[in-house]
Image 1: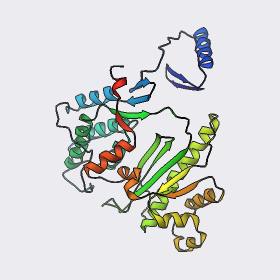
Image 2: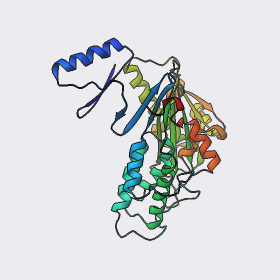
Image 3: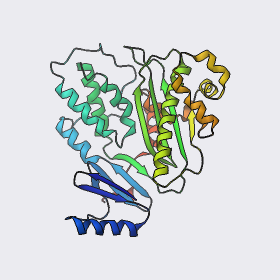
Length: 325
């Protein structure tokens, strides 16, 4: 059983309804508690349930954000960011950064249920200290994308498949200002996306192998943490997790100690991947770039490719059977 508390709001969930009922009754005996039955709304998250699964979205929050920023009547766009790279030196400095920072700060909360926004929002966050009019245009583009996709959210399927697997990817030297790379991962439990990240690497990578290896290390570290969490929740994994990467050389580096002599410039702590592989706590596998689900978290993509990956990340509209709930 899991209990989530935020100030005076409580969510209780678990696999045993009897235990949940007993806990709620106990709380009622100690405090003035109002039982709102099944979860529908919590801290800006809207939850709809049916026999086919659970849909989590932030439609009201999105609409409130569009109203606040004056973008309600804007023309929707099909992608959140244009092809190409944004730079610190693009455009003219804004006289005040307050509006930009407010928009980007609000967009960060949108990524709780929208991994398709992760890369664009991460990019916008890199200009918080000195935003320009070009950066503001990029932020408004995300809002215009949001205008046409307020109905989208994560759909979680009920499943007995407790397999943990992840995709990691990176875009080499994608930042025009400091040549640092962007790395990303998305982690699934069964068919459900449960964790994702898009971030700029903290150091400059000297080769594509190195940057992919750093991305793989970040994903492996998150997988290790999730393994520990699931174990504490009484749900040990039936099989070691699988990590998918589209760089063959990186996979060889993680499994072949002979190659390590050529990569001493990579920090030693990233070699913990190999230790996991040797202990068979983690399996590595190749996936073609066409099936690299983390690709949309590392770079701008053309519309057709972006929309295809968005669907594979289970960012979907609320099913017809759930509408009106």
